[in-house]
Length: 396
Image 1 (cartoon, rainbow, N blue to C red):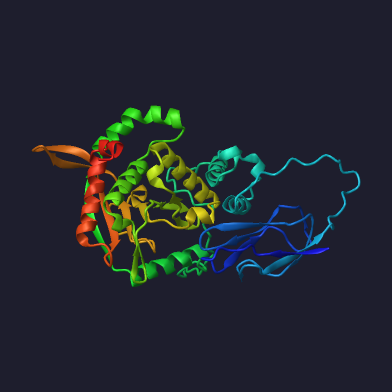
Image 2 (cartoon, rainbow, N blue to C red):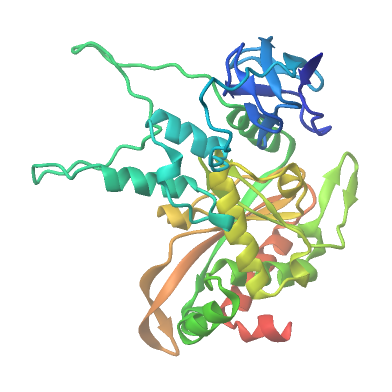
């Protein structure tokens, strides 16, 4: 019996997908639920499993091809698995670890047996960082003192004859194309302005120093700055609901909930998973979800639901050293907060010059519905909440 291997149903907002790679060739035996290929959409990477035990009889689309919901990817012949060779033991082989697409590509590119890597993820799952750490451990240090920075394992190498000016053409990924589309959409359909301010994080830094160890021991998560920014943003959004609104043709939709998008890096580019009902989360729950988003982004396992929606976003270019930037709105949202690097700078406090940990803040907003006065006061409210964190606890 032959069974068609089809593209799973894609969400309404996703038009098509691109085949990243096949893990089997035509004629190879397959096992039920074994991943046969990876599909890349503009949001996530989907793993397509084998529906039954059998033989992958036919492949109809190759890596790089674009497919849509219900397209037939190939044919699996049921019950056609080759019998065990004479003399083989009946005992089952030790199961291979479950690998995400990003991890699978990395171990394949470097010829690594994943069974040799100790996973640090949930249920000992192997993360991309575990593979990179393993590669570093296996790579001997250079003999000379002039050490070169380590090359990323997944960086494609150019083989250009000497004396020529190297160039390399590579197709955009689905995610990169979608990001480009959304950036153009935001710039063409919204009247984007940006207002700036700076915030003194001295009080928050004291709180983190005083309670960090207790917080981490009780909640098993690091107390970062992001939870303070999420809390401060939620309180400001409550006072200025238009910043939490969105435009739908000639209407303004005011959202009575606070779904905060948190921009995180992934091997495929920037993704923005959503903290649902952020106003109902405590500091530990916010930090735990953000950590989970980061791990899933690196593994390529974020779901559509985690990447869909959002009423306001926060992006932190400071982790890469950015001092100041103008973030672009993530449609259909109407505003986004940009965080930047924290630097010790001299400021005047009570008539005296003191050194304080300062950060520049940027708020980009859609001027079609948000007036400059509201945008400025919204950002000032965030600044006040962060400089007096007791306000966040008391919601005043």
